[in-house]
Image 1 (cartoon, rainbow, N blue to C red):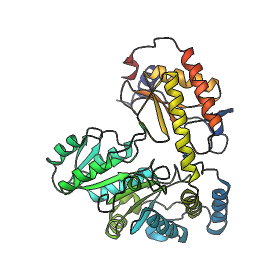
Image 2 (image 1 turned 120 degrees about the horizontal axis):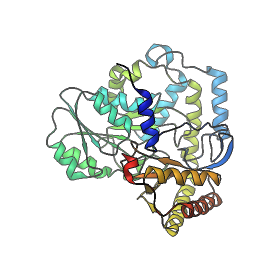
Image 3 (image 1 turned 45 degrees about the vertical axis):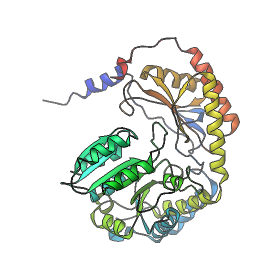
Amino acid sequence: MSFNLSSRLAERRAAHLYRQRPLLESPQGVRVVVDGQPLLAFCNNDYLGLASHPAVIEAFAEGARRWGVGGGASHLVVGHSQPHHELEEALAEFTGRPRALLMSSGYMANLGAVTALAGQGDTVLEDRLNHASLLDAGLLSGARFSRYLHNDMNSLASRLDKSQGNTLVITDGVFSMDGDLAELPGVCATAAERGAWVMVDDAHGFGCLGNNGGGIVEHFGLSVEQVPVLIGTLGKAFGTAGAFVAGSEELIETLIQFARPYIYTTSQPPAVACATLRSLQLLQGEHWRRERLAQLIAQFRIGVADIGLELMNSPTPIQPILVGSSERAMALSAALREQGILVTAIRPPTVPRGTARLRVTLSAAHTENDVNQLLDALKRAVAQLPVTQSSEAHDA
């Protein structure tokens, strides 16, 4: 017996679900060159426009000259460099928590935190729309794992009533494919009534939400006691790479001792930490970036409504246009690209069947003219499409 990989790939192609990697031939930004074509991009997560900021680049270069280009070993061997330590202290202060722990990626931060805190005999409850890394972490933990209906406190409460052992309630802060916010005050209150801990993956909230960019916890004014485990990603609004977990002294020490993705992974290059320290300063000091984002979001939402397209309920830079079938989403994305606009079509299994979409992401580096160009291109792209497309069977 052998693996029939060809048939699996053919089925994915036939269902309009085949994925290909665009080749980026320029620095990350709102104007890119992809597969040789200059494009205006609305599909990266560089929400504050810091990925190619000259000061961040210079901090990275200086860090490489001072500390080299590799971490060299895991943090627990000899890979925990001074820039890593300084960044952890700065992130702890930024989040208002006693300590923070650097991880090499957001995926690893979620896996490490969940599997270190919950195991056999415990319970992990997650929002149904959580990121894949959170779902994988819940499954790998060995705990009883269940998903509650999206932002539904009654559904969460009913599952909490059936929980056993230590219970961890996990939610995204900003849901990456819908752009909406977690009902975090309700999640915290519901969990607290039943003695459960709350963990928030605020990958898409940091930098964008809160008066100081502190994310959804700052946005709602919640405490460390209400959200004991806070995850942040550095590759989005921070513009660099890696992730962190922020919480109590005991939490961080527990992760250092028991989180396998932390213990057994080489640390990120110290130069990345140097760059992130600089981007954190910009994130905190340049409030105009969040203000511009808010203006662009409002402009885009008004413009899309005028075109007659269906936007999802998002106050964040993630602005998904609900399309329906994968074929139609792909056709719209292709029509935009012909006009020099790059917007990714998001299809199952990333999103549920029948909810394929164009995931538009806005950046503080965009201008009002950029948004107007996107809106004009969308209007033309919609006009080019046939009135009906193939059935939703393509999303099976």
